[in-house]
View 1 (cartoon, rainbow, N blue to C red):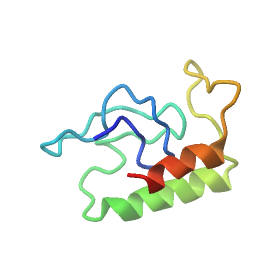
View 2: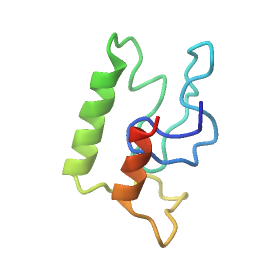
View 3: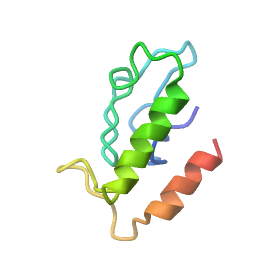
Length: 87
């Protein structure tokens, strides 16, 4: 698995959201703020949680979450979201 956020498509996570055994990375996406292994803990249908989080994030203007890890100057939310379709 690649180091791509399953919610927003950010492709520079430090670790994959889940390892090959299904263990969560416990990483917070610097782009959308989703915390793998916390925001989706004890959820039967993770896909629904991901879609809901993505919808809220987009509805709120796709605001960058991290104050320390900033997007590059060419950041484009539509291009980034396209990476989810390729998973």
